[in-house]
Length: 102
Image 1 (cartoon, rainbow, N blue to C red):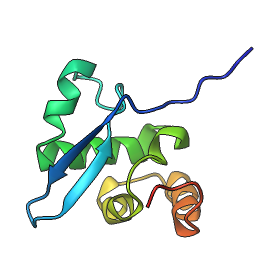
Image 2 (image 1 turned 45 degrees about the horizontal axis):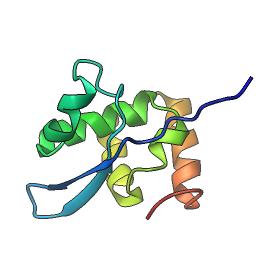
Image 3 (image 1 turned 90 degrees about the vertical axis):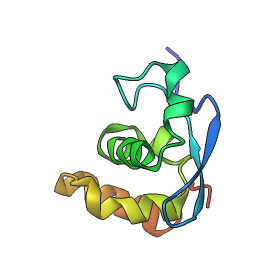
Image 4 (image 1 turned 120 degrees about the vertical axis):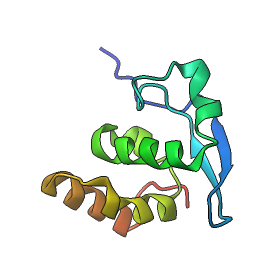
């Protein structure tokens, strides 16, 4: 049996309310209510991008989360309301820069 890891189908660049430019991976399935064809456009809205990132932090496998910019993930961790074990695991992975884009 061969395992398939979650991989982004592309990226989207958005400008946050404070003018920061962020490039996010497009991973269908993180926001269940959006079809893959709708996700790329929706992620250009900073509010949707934050919700998408929170959902990724809460539920997505590391093979998907690792494609997000490290600084963006770290900034979203506090607001994501993560279960203690998930938070600690992500802090460990994010803290040493393990397999992260940047």
